[in-house]
Image (tube, rainbow, N blue to C red; front, side, top):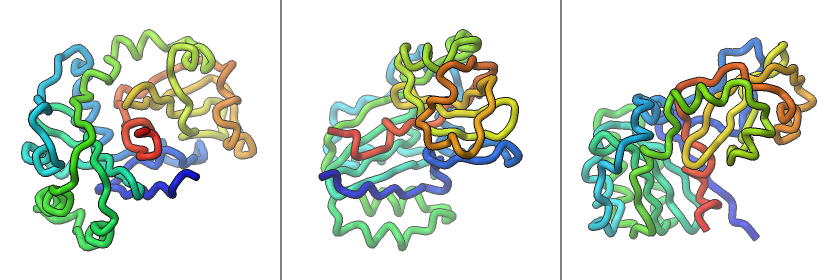
Length: 227
């Protein structure tokens, strides 16, 4: 049996499973999403961070540059993505549920939030750590996807994650590939009754636009996907 996944947003973690009517402001996003996409050129750059000597999350977070932290955990793994040395780093550690209560005491709006967060999780033993900056598609690669159907994207390795806008002549959907997801607009109408169809309504529709900002995908943060 899969253990319950506990997701906690650092400042404003994107709600990947949420849907919003077309009349609402465009889908939800996080400061981590914005920072993750600050440069589309990152996809062509080599890794900027050497993770080979890290053994704990304390080692990993020693180079953290901002309050920009997204994380989630279950009773087995703690997963986080953060900025360090100009790169996006994803770290997976063994979770200690004795720490769970301490997260509630952290003030996400405090200037020293990142430092306090690092202190709480510093002793967690790393399972893996990697610079994921190169996993993000460049703007040129995204532009080349305009005109493709949802099914063609799936055939190319994308995974439907959620609808972000629906109810109008066009529909917004988040499509993930690797550790990043992208807000795509499709030339089809999807009403509220279709929003639980796991993307079936846009499989035959064509992409008309793609948001250049790369959100973190479910694969980046879901601890249930670690194994």
